[in-house]
Length: 290
Image 1: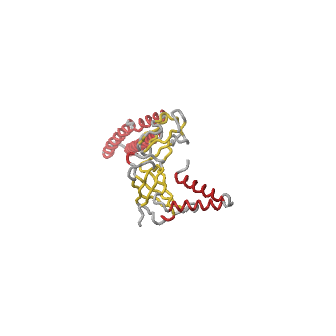
Image 2 (image 1 turned 45 degrees about the horizontal axis):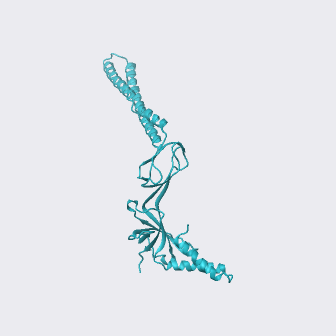
Image 3 (image 1 turned 60 degrees about the vertical axis):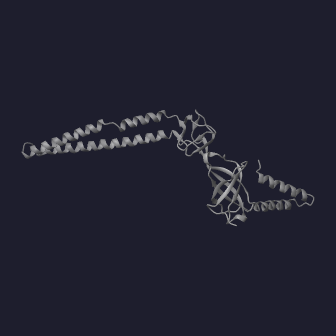
């Protein structure tokens, strides 16, 4: 399907070729027709453009698994953070429950606390007896060693509990990978996989953010240096009789297309309530200084 500008170009070239076909100068006429069309475009205030989504993403799964549910379909609106796909996760849920039980276990910690307190009291009594010459030196040493071993056992239990907590976090993170959320607010362009299929390298959904919209336009060389970042412009969507929409320039391509004598410009246009669809053709007028 040709755009309006492309159809104009084709008609221009065909007319030129008809006038020159008996002269054997078809290639020359083709070149003249092309540059004549470019010149007429440069003279126009309104430049052809196309309205594209601000962002398009293909949603996949970071892990392989069977798709349990796809909560959205083509054409549905989604918000950033909304759950759109769930994978089968019975094993991961059980692993999280087991890791949580280990991390919250209190018996070992309490046992070592009791032993540590008892060994401290035993050492205190042994020191009193040793001062009164009621026990030998090695008995005091045994009590002190027992107290130290009880403290080490408590430290080991504390460290193990910390490790169990990290295992719980890891299991929870693995479970979270089975739930896929939307990274943007926009519309579902397509659904590529369905429940029961294997998710992996193949994208599951395609999403597009259409607020704001990206406006792509190829400007003639006469505007090179006049179109600058942040410059305002008026955009007229195809088929819209309303007032023009306001946009501003976000990218000016410094590489010239020598074949067409144009350079690329990208604008950003607010699209409140997603009122305008992406993919429409449009015209844009830059507010350049006279």
